[in-house]
Amino acid sequence: MLVLGILFLTDDFNTSIIVIILGMAVLAAFACFEIRRKRNGKIPLLDIKLFKDRNLRAGTTILILCYLIMGGGLFAVSVYLQSVLDLNAFDTGLTTLPLTAGLLIFSMIAPSLSEKMTHKKIMAIGSIMSIIGCLILSYQFRLDTSPLELVPGMFVLGAGFGFIMALNVDIALTNVPAESQNNASGVTSTGESLGESLGTAIIGIILILGVFGGISHAVDIYAPQYSGNETFTLDVFNHFEKMSIDDVKADSSVVNILDTIIQDVMAFVMIVMAILMALIFVLILRLKDMKQ
Image 1 (tube, rainbow, N blue to C red):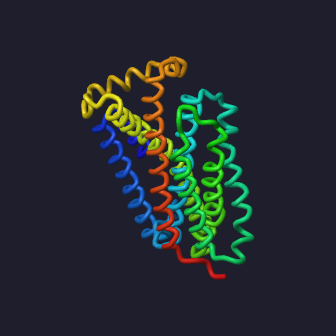
Image 2 (cartoon, rainbow, N blue to C red):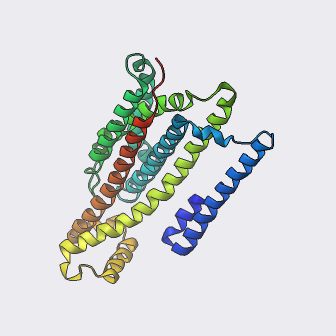
Image 3 (cartoon, rainbow, N blue to C red):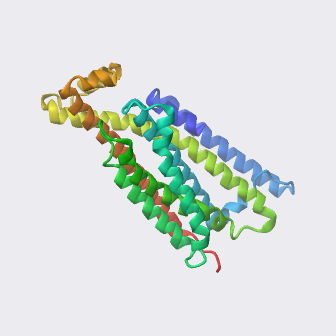
């Protein structure tokens, strides 16, 4: 219901808020139900007391944010590659492959590296690497970008995720009693699924907001007499929505305007991702490190 509420934001704000509130109310009711079952001596589906453990709370939040960023980021990049660069599904997959490669390689390096460094330090380094990857990518998206130009940023972003994800579950579950490990593992798995679902919804909203912000910026540059005119901005949005890439490239003035919009939109998405990665860095610092 939380994801559905977020998806409604661009269509009906009031309905969206109602659905989000209902989703939170259902979660609160579930928590109260589980607490009551535990007090009555019955086995709960989820032991709410597990969340008293700081590592489990922070670790699950880190997982949610990581999957939110990765799922939402891949969605945004895929939309750009297919809608702007006009790549097919296969070429889109090849272009995003460096992120997966970086994640895979560095997730295999992380366990052996943990023998020399603490989990927290490796994960903190990973979050910084991912922030750098986002900042690199924020300058790469244009109308004439080559897919090869995205490789460095995608690889660095994925490498940072590899360091974090390889060690996060271990450190999140380190203080959980053996009899509660299955329960806690289910919490982290649910966090992964929730983060991925939220990522697509939230980044989708950010893309739309970024488009309008990019159009406003382009209007300020190329048509300052209409600066601040919301009706004109909406007309420009509707006009570009009907145009194909071939139509755009046939008019040099339109190319410049659309190039500005694309740069602003994707830079906005990457900056939001970098801010979320900075939040992950803060959460990592709150973790209690595993005993060596």
